[in-house]
Image (cartoon, rainbow, N blue to C red):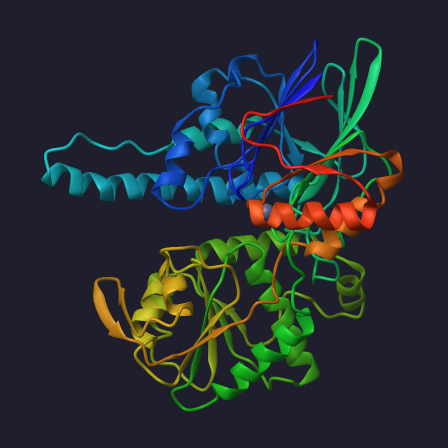
Length: 463
Ligand SMILES: [Zn+2]
């Protein structure tokens, strides 16, 4: 039995593992590489997984860096079930369709440029029909129960507390009379985050693949971040004052709604007026509301007391682009939560074009801003930016609130691993850059006295 590490080795995107026994071949994750052109070029190179011979694929959660290359598989003769939790499958419907749309429109944009220079057309990485081919291949699995996914391969999904439906997965492999247990952490959420239950861990494993996105640090306490957001929302209550929050549509937007609902209940912000202005965020919020069974005890306490946790009187969801444009003249501290989270597209752009030049505007960044994005330029303090073809002198107040992560910090990662320590697992750190992996390796050695490995792309782990 062996496992090949074919992605997210020394980087945070492109997760992919191949599990092989004498009886079965199972793909675990097939995520997209995200970043600059050099990184994204890797998406075009099919790793050595021979999709036609796979017995199954397994997915921990819907984020594209875990799921985003699945639509490529049917083109390569893949014909097997993809196992995931119900909420993950539904979120994949939203995220993969959006991803195909982005691939198609960026190829179309590139082709205008290429045609002018007499170059041949660029093709999208995949298209909407590819996504529609792969979505019916998903098979729903329950949480907390073993499911046979391939001959001699049983898998169990447990809460990871990261986004709706997200799980860590334990595999029990049986081959030639041997039995081994392998754990894939997926992405682990922070403890005490709103809405979702805290991450669940396992009590034993022979091998653990552990994410290390924030392997080098702990996050600021979330309460400080909530207080800071409330302060900004109150500060913006001037006749022309407005708060713009570029936010990831899935996960972060729902957290913000939950926090602002709390501010309203506690009177910290009086009668907040909030518009969620992103079709994808609206669909994702609907999906969260339909999966209350995944909410944590705090949420259920509210629900049982007659208070919905993803709703408050001043919350609105815009529909058409006209509704979105109608928000432009509003003031009095109106808050607009819109995508894309890094300002790389979406309706947030027209809000920024309208608001960045005004000193009454507050732009609040609540998530990671990748290199080269408009979001990063604003966070880094650029006073002149180009938005939708217009050059704008930035007069708005730019705020960065760092405590809303969907990932566990270093201490929590070590704690998550600690419960498996006594079974003496071999630990492999993935889904993190080398600086983060190194720091986590040292911490794991210091606290748990386990020697964690940092696999490279293509490394084979003998089980
Ligand atoms: Zn994730």
